[in-house]
Image (cartoon, rainbow, N blue to C red; front, top):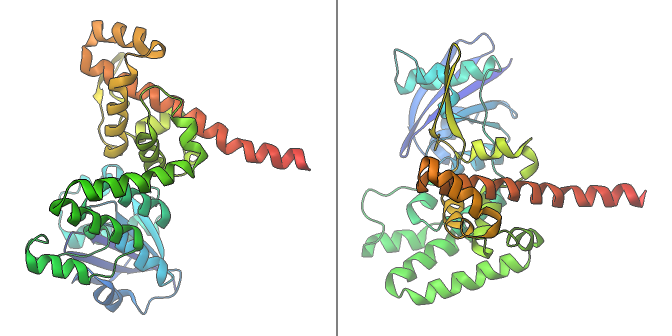
Length: 324
């Protein structure tokens, strides 16, 4: 008998709904986040059971748990999940059950689940203690930066990259320059070892750190069928509202990857003065203002980065065909 699971994930607790093949809710329980409580609800379900959950704050721990125990995780795009967003009756039980029903009907607007190595690279570059802890399912009532909090942090079992980031940030609070230098060395080593970084740093305004952030956030570039799709995912495309024959273009959506959008806008501050982009920047600035013009340059940078990365992915395939 087929079984479907919907989980409404929150920072400290999650609501878990288990549905049978007819869509009947058999279990709908609220539990603390963690391996034991979650397995207490779904641990007896068959290997391969599909599990749907929204891309909420700190979902990485749940993906690892599900993959480790043989379940199929389905990450849901929250803004596109209209059945939940527009529901008149809205609570955790309803949301979890709705996720399960959408999963059963194969109607989920799914988001990409970055592989563990990509999530670890993001952790290294994003460099935020609370975000790392949330992504791994850890939480503490008090501050993590007090004496007891530091002891608690030191006792946690974290993946290597996450542990390195947490330790570096704690050192950063004690002596700024030492961990900054150590992180710079590590990032430089990553940059030297990745030929894609050299490609991206040929773009105006893009240095090794910017290139690494682009690579970490984008992940597998071939999952995007076009540069425009990637720009939309980054939240760098304008919103469009149409009615009858009237079409209005608004500001950028800001609904995508905030880190990718931020680093590209930072790079655009330099790129807009480069001959490749200066004319476009000044033309847009005269019509729409400097802020919108800078965002437009960020989108152009991302478009060029997309084509460079797509070409890099295609080269090994061409070499394989030539070898045959």
